[in-house]
Length: 222
Image 1 (tube, rainbow, N blue to C red):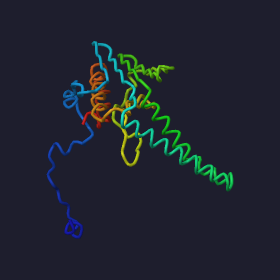
Image 2: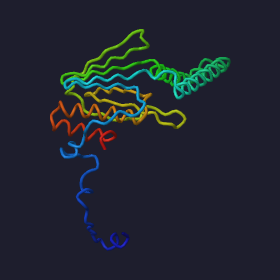
Image 3: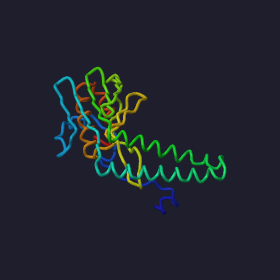
Image 4: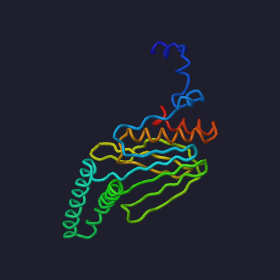
């Protein structure tokens, strides 16, 4: 390498066809390999396909070990910030204002944990729409609809970290909107569910659009 730089020579190394292709690109041949997979053993996620519609039910996380750990960590964080704020108030209000970012982090974490434990999500896919229904502990629910043709990406994305441990979510991109699902699911469950959504999209979207979706959904389809 040093000789080449000093002598201004150009070394040409033969590159195989597989290496010439960008690792994130894909053609219709690779897309043809995309097919439905068996559900992971032990999963509680329900997936039903009747030829036209895909129904997905993601149950609430409940009080599992990992969720309890996050709740305890969250409670410790909020208690620590509360004590620190009270002590700071004895000095000056201005000094206590420095605790606001820590309150924001703690309350944001609390919202995520409550969502993981109590929220049940139902997805309904049709060739025209994607309907996302969130049921919050049976108390109230929200419902959103998106044009199915706006689907651009299906992939596992990093949601947050706790003690350097990454927590992922299955993310659907609909135009400029990002829908995060299943933060309490295992990575295997997320990838399986993402694959089933891609298989459905393959059946009901134009090939050119599907190739683009598959290209940018590399964490699922690679």
